[in-house]
Image 1 (cartoon, each protein chain N blue to C red):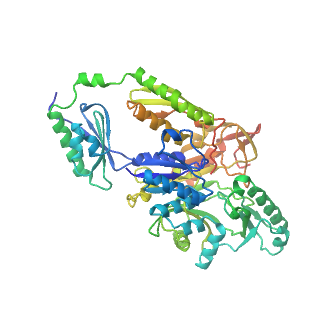
Image 2: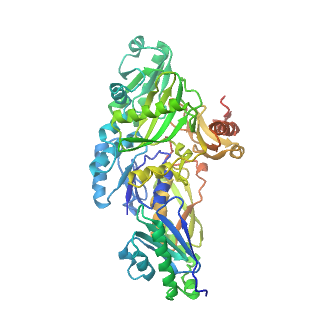
Image 3: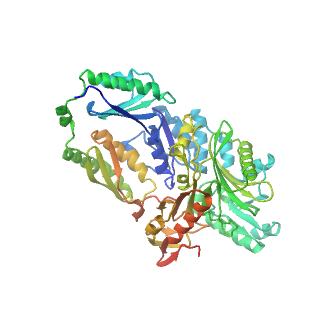
Length: 198
Length: 418
C-alpha cells in the first residue's frame, strides 16, 4: 500500500459546521457516531479526533470521517489537524485490514429481517391507530427504503411520523441502517389522516 | 446537543421543510402538535401534545417537558402558534418576541389600534361583534369596504362589499364561517369581525427577519394578480419586486415601523401592504414566516432554506452572510376554482416541462373535498419557477398553470383562469 494517504475534504453545502473527509482507504470497520469525548473513550481514532480543539462530533464509517465543528470555528485549522490525525492513525497500522472490512459488512438479509420485525412489532401497530401502514421496500448497503400507505400516505404529519418515529427507531434498533428513504408517492394518497391546509 | 421545539399544527404545509432544516443543522427536534402521534411512546423526547387554543396550558406542559429535555429555541408556523411560542420563550427565557407583541400581531383589531397610535398608515377600520345588527351597521359605513374575521389568515373569510346589501350578505357569510366548531373554540376573537376601507392599489408581501428589533429584508414579493375582491385569493408571489426603488424603500420603512409599533423584535415576520400614490398601507403583519409551501421560493447562500435560516437565527447561529440568490423566483398558489371533490389531475408532465419551472407540488389529494374561498383555506398545490427576471418567472408560472387540468366533481375545470 502506498504510504501517502490521500484525503479529500468536502464541506456540507447545507451545514457549514459539517465537513466530510474521504480517505483513500478504510479507516474503520463499521460505523460509529460519537457526540462527545466520553463516548470516544476506547475508540483510538475518535479519541485522537476529539483531542482537536473545536471538534464537536465525529462519525466514521468505512473510509469516511465526518466532523462537526463548534459553531463559527475556523475550518482551516481544524481540517489540518483532522488530516494529520487520520494519517498518523493509518501509519501506526491501526486501520482495518481488508479481511476485517469484509467481516464488518452487514448481511443484508439479517438487516432486512431486523427492520421487518421492528415494523411489524412496534411501528405498524402504532400507526394503525391512524389507519396507516409502512412496508419495507428494500435494504441496500446501509440504507432502508420504505413506503407508507393508508392514513400516512399524503398525511400532513407523515414527515413527523417518518423522521421523529420510524427513522429514529430503525436507526436506534438496527444501527447497521444509517439512512431511511421514503419512497411514498404522497400526492397519490387518497385518505390522509391529516390534510394540510395553510 | 441543541434541541429545537417546532410548534406544528397537524394541518401545516411546513412540517417537511422544518424537519429537513433541523436535520441539516444536526439539532434534536421535538414536535408539538395539537393531536398525539401514534409513535409518541417510542420517542418521548420527540413528541409533545398540546392545545394551541390554550396557550397558558400548553406553556405549562412545555416548561415541564423542558426540565427533562432542555429546549434552546421554539419555532411557530402560524399566528396561533406564534402566541404559544412567545409564552414558551418567556417561560424558558429564550430569545423571542414578547407575549404582548405576539398577541397584538395575532389580532387584527389590536394590531390596527397600535399602528394607528404609532402613525403607521392602516385602512380605516371598525370592530364588530357577530351579534351586531348588520343592516344597522351597513348604514354607517364607507364603501367599498372589506369584511374580515379577526383571527383567520390566508384571506379566509375576507370579502369586499361595495353596497349596504353586499355588506349584509358578506357579514352573514363571515358569521357562518366563524360558526365552525374548530373556529368557535378559539374564544372571543372568533366572534368578532373587522370592517375596513378597501384600499386600491398593488399588493406586496415583505418577508423579513428581526434581530434585536432590527429588520432585515429577506425578500420583497410582488403580487402581480389584482386583489380587488370580492374575495382575495392569493395566487402569484414573485421576487425581486419591480416596484420603483423609492417605493420599495417606503415599504421597507413602513414594515420596520409596523414591527416596532407592535413590539416585535425577534424572528421572522411576514407583512402584507398595499401600495398606491399615497404612503404604503399596512394590511397585516404576522410574527411568522410566509405560509403554505411558498418558502420554497426562497433560497439563501449556497442553497439554505428559509426554514434553516429561521432555525439558525433562533439558535443564535450566524445568518448575516446569507443573502437571497440573485435569480428571480416565484410561486403560484393554485387556487380552487369551485367546490367539489377532486377526481383527477392531468397535465402535470407538460406543466413541469415549461421552461423555468422548478417544481410543481399538488397538495390536494384525489377524493378530497375542495372548498374555495372565502370558506376554504386550502390550495390545490404550488408551482415554483425561477428565471432571469420577474417577468419571465411570472410567465413560466402562468404557462404551467394553463397546462394543468383538475377534474373536480366529475367535470373538468381547465385552470386557465376561467
